[in-house]
Length: 381
Ligand SMILES: *Cc1c(COP(=O)(O)O)cnc(C)c1O
Image 1 (cartoon, rainbow, N blue to C red):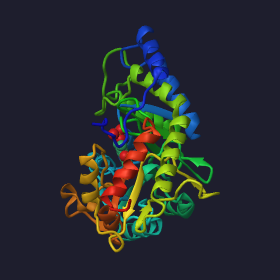
Image 2 (cartoon, rainbow, N blue to C red):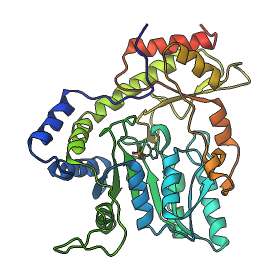
Image 3 (tube, helix red, strand yellow):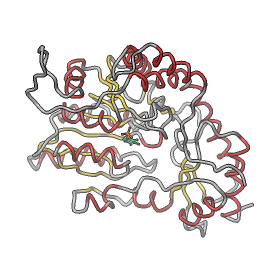
Image 4 (cartoon, protein in one colour):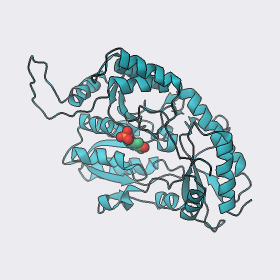
């Protein structure tokens, strides 16, 4: 039996080992330390923002960003329905009411619908504390179409770039589009600190306040003095060392994932009804450059008589992990009854989409096995 092929596993080498060992041996094991500062500096530079705050998770970064922008009881936050639960959870933590908006064909939020929704909510007299965009599966939203439309409405943007570190749009990096942005270094993301996240912003005052909230809101006094409720959200020095090593290898991990996407594209080129979500590699001067975090395919039910669940169980039996796309938030029991502005696109993408093993540690032989097994299940070989 071959080794099981996973969707997206942590990919670490002796470079990371060296940095982690260095952090351990330096004595900076207790939470904060020089590796945290270095990791923040290097990620901020990579993303083209003025500052960064290393945190325990991407969810924590979203939570603090929303708090800083005034999300709370009596306000609403507009965000895509198709996303990972964490985006909506962060809104719920603040006490704000999430309003969900449907997807465009590439799964990212439908920008026109998003802006229209904000206009409608404002015209109803509601306080829209923020809009959150999510750069899904490693691809930036259409920030060209968004332009300054939210600024004109006076509503700040939070960018959930948890899946998109290394992607760009119009020459700008994912993580640089909002008043604040969140990255995730969870184990399955394009790079990892085993668990962790980062808040990015050009607004250093916002980052300072978030830093204070993330360390139990401790006042500058000789004793432990607190005037508000804080959080224990910081990243540890040992994990930041892992991040410094991963960041050094980020470009090589992105190019490996790009090669994997190419291999899938070539391997399925002749299958009618099988399409790739977003744009493929080599589409030329695309204004968006994907980080190729996960390769997602869509199975057209008019042309293929196999649905995602059947494909996934066939692959599972062959020792291959594949998954559904994110189940839209408006279909989640926890958000039942919440407001959602729908076109049917995210439901269709959820019903037809499959994410395939895309981890940078996978070799060509493993990808070829996924291609062969997929073709077998689809009866296309
Ligand atoms: C992974 C992810 C998060 C949360 O990140 P954690 O580090 O796991 O808390 C948030 N939003 C999206 C879209 C994600 O994929």
